[in-house]
Length: 116
Length: 138
Image: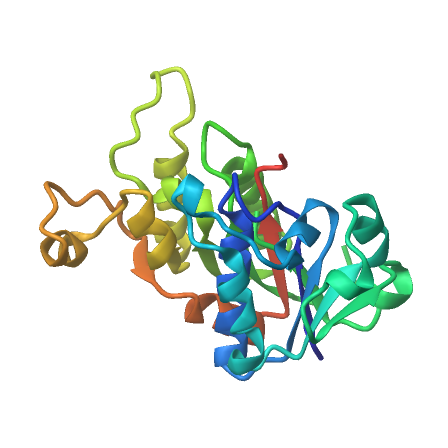
């Protein structure tokens, strides 16, 4: 069964989200089924047209766009968090699906993990 | 306690000692699990959790030395302790071979911890019956 890796941290200001993405890529590299869920401030990962050069960081957008190449099964965005952070369905990158995060959703996964 | 199924655990620690309670909570869990007849397959340090494997930690003498407490536990029970190499290198935690590779001033990895990749975490997920996470909680 698939593992759900949850990113609930904003893309900049902490390294936890980046390290979560590394975990997801590594799972996928070993052919283990993995789904990514962005929730809370983590939905800001999904904003398009990010430019982090002024804070001398790499945009996480390019990082995340590699997810399908690595074989990550699905990328989900928590619907309520998207509303909270002003992200419309049309603003999300291609392949990202809105999801309602509740017990029913979590029951579909063998395990859930956060990076920090 | 009866009819308790023996579990095998991979423990993932992402919180650093002294700035979070994660390593000590994980150690209390590990000891309790062994007492109840369960097994600890491995301990994986990730993110700030790698600071637990620093040989240069020097807390005041009236405080528990968490890296040594963990190191003693791992040795006593022959549990592998692995620090994620990518997390470790970013945070200034290196073994002898990384010291040489990057021409650094010193090596500071506390035995029996070793550096290895996230593949160790993936393997823990596959082999252990449960994987538990100990976060900083912030």
